Amino acid sequence: MRLNALHSLNKSPRLLAIETAKDITMPSRLTKIARLILGCSSLLAVSAGATADELRVGLGVGAAPQFAGSDEYRIIPFPSISYKTEKFEITTRGIGVQANLSQSKYVDFGPIIRLDTGRNDFNDVDDPLIARLAQIDAGLELGGFVGTSYPLAFSEDGRPTLLTAGISAVQSLGGHEGVLASASLGFVKPMGAVTLVGSVSSTYATDKYNQSFFGISAEDALATGLSEFDIDGGVRDVGAGLVISYNFNEKWRLTNIAQYTHLIGDTADSPIVTRGSQSQLFGGLNISYRFR
Image 1 (tube, helix red, strand yellow):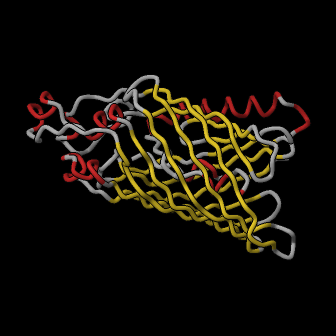
Image 2: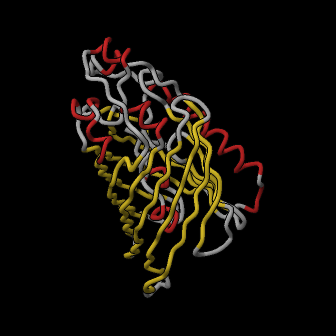
Image 3: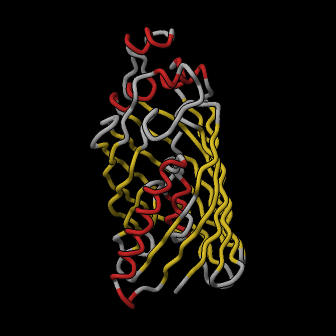
């Protein structure tokens, strides 16, 4: 399952909290694509010149479900990059990037571009029946996000404890051809060298997305023996996440991430999910370095 909090390892704390953790699955065969995305992000950073106030790059490892509804997991690379100026901030978001174009302290907005890896396309599936289902091609997803935060209190060093909220939506230009929309509510709590970021979230998926990933067509039923299953759009899941980051100094940061997502409604009734699990977990560890 694609998991999304965790694209935000190197961004500002309020951005870290207002987004959910649902878009991070990166099969090993996609490592070259990830490197290309990181390379493009780095090129954008360098091309902006000396006005940058932060460039941070990280490497890590994580574990994620093999596909939406799977009870089997894979180890995935977990890179990250963040480039911030006075006017914008570019960060990796799963297998993709997003740009915060806001210059406000408490409002964020901007575009998202990322790759959905589909199913049985880039990523292999261990379950022999799921592997026989029709392939869902990888596709480019385009969309945007908006978020806000409200300071609840301030620490002795002037850093705020924040209440955060945000929404995002993406449209696939290939593959499932559906729309995913997410909403989240969270907090950011700085405590010396440690920063805690917690969030609860939910995702809505359209008919095309749900039928692609959770439906069973007549052809699929014949190939696998699973029951036919038609599904409409609706709320796909609810979830909760926790990010704990520790700054060793001004340069080095260690980030630990845990995310739990529970598939609900018609999604949970899919033969794909009942064969696997409604409970989807993600865990990741990333260490990053600030260059400037």
